[in-house]
Image 1 (cartoon, rainbow, N blue to C red):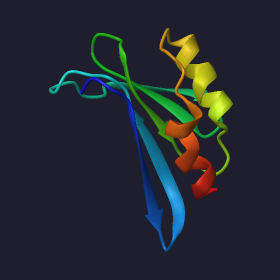
Image 2: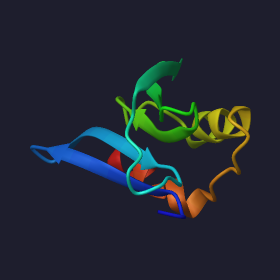
Image 3: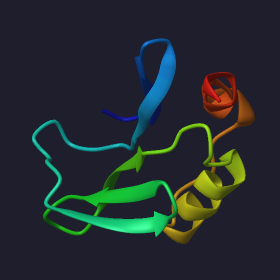
Image 4: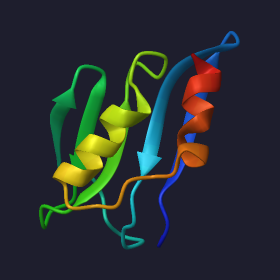
Length: 90
């Protein structure tokens, strides 16, 4: 996968969690997870490369927080349009 994409899981019509998939190789799996902010976890592959952001509180994590974490990881921020579903899910 070459481009990041966001997936939101709903239960009973309410957002339960979200996952921002980051660019990764097809066979890469998460081997370590770190908390980046309240409601936001980073998954890392075996080589230490970030491969995804777990958003455990989609209605409470701001797009600015996600973009700050991406910048801290040396990744490009996402356009507002890519993160707009999080606002809708809130």
